[in-house]
Length: 227
Image (tube, rainbow, N blue to C red):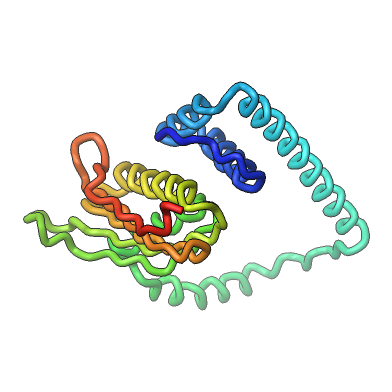
């Protein structure tokens, strides 16, 4: 998906952050393709600026890690306390016996739970995104049992203009569909509903399982995304 680089200060560096995330997903083929498309669309000066920004962020990350290690060292010197000695074997056996009933009463995960857990993992990678609701319904359009339609309602809290917001939501929706195609063969259809408070905008992007991937079936963005 091509795009024209938005030259606003905040939008540019937010875009750099998203590109660095995509570049870091070395095992995700779709993420790498998206990164390459975005990077190729940059001018030479923008590519140089992105390289400098990435180098600066890496130095900043190293500084944070070093500070964290030093803080752990100080904590170990002044606040560390020795652990209590191991309990006798008889006491440990009693505790194990009392814990077993709790493990036996744990609820077995359903296919719907598995799908919801995967969606929650995907959304963690989408900057500024909150989950409103995840609904998993049986797919009544097929004769096969165990096929599902997944409805995901999300809020995107990032403040960008309408055009850039649309590009980001399409990218996130496509990423979710691609990962769902690979991880969840029982998910036959996906609809992602977006709310963007900053634009007072609503959007919907839908997919259907096809040969080789999840194909777009519908994309609806209200007029606020054209601003």
